[in-house]
Image (cartoon, rainbow, N blue to C red; front, side, top):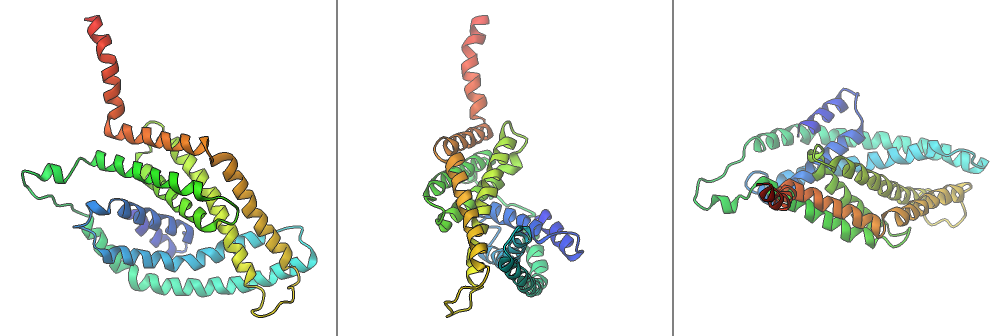
Length: 297
C-alpha cells in the first residue's frame, strides 16, 4: 500500500514513471486478490473495483509508451518504412498525451479517496474471541503456503496452453499467472532459494511481456491502414514483419526454455519454498536426524 502511495507521489512530482506506478498497483491488487477470502470482512468489493478501474486507466498510456519505444529502436529501415515510422511516432505521441490527460483526471478524482479508505481498512484485522476461532482462522504460514501452491498450479496449467506464436490470449493468461506468483513470493525473498525463484519468474515475465507487446504492436500497426482501403501503405509491411518476427522469437524461446523440464523444475522448486514456509522441511529434517541422535545417546 505504501509503495503505491509513494509511486503516486513520484508521478505528481514528475520524478517517477507510469510503469513503476503500474507495478506497485499490480502488486497490491495481486496480494488483495490472493488473500481475498481472509480479507472478506475488511476489504469490500468496491475497493477491488476501484483499484481495477485505476489499473485500466493506465493501460492505454503504457501500451502507447511501449509502442513508441519500439519504433525508436527500429534502425536500418527502408526509406518508406522510415517515413512511416516517423509519422506514426508523431501520431502516437499525440495519443499518449491525450491518454495521460485522461489518466490524470481519473487519478485526481479517485486515487486519494480510495487509498485513504483502503489504508484505514488494512490498518487492523479483527478476530472474534470464540472457542473455534483457531479453526476459522488458521495460521498465516499455512495460508501463505497454500496460496503459493495454488498460484503455482495456475501457472503450470496456463503456460502449456501457449501452442504457437499466435496464442496471445493463452500467453497473456500465463503472464498474469506468473506475475501473481512472483508477487506472492517477493515478501519471502530472504527465505532459502526464493530470491533465485523470483529471478526465474522475472525472466519468464519479461519473455511473456515481450510476446504480449509484439501482439499489441501488430494490432496497432494494423490500425495504421485506413479502414476500408485495400491499397498497401508504403513501409507498413516491413514494420509488421518486424513485429511478427518478435512474437515468433519469443515463442521459440518459450518453447526452448520453459517447456517440459524447465516448467516442471520451477513448479517443484516453488512447492519446496511453500513447504519451507510451513516448516515441513525442518520437520522432515528433524525426523531424519532423530534416529542418529538416539544412536549417539
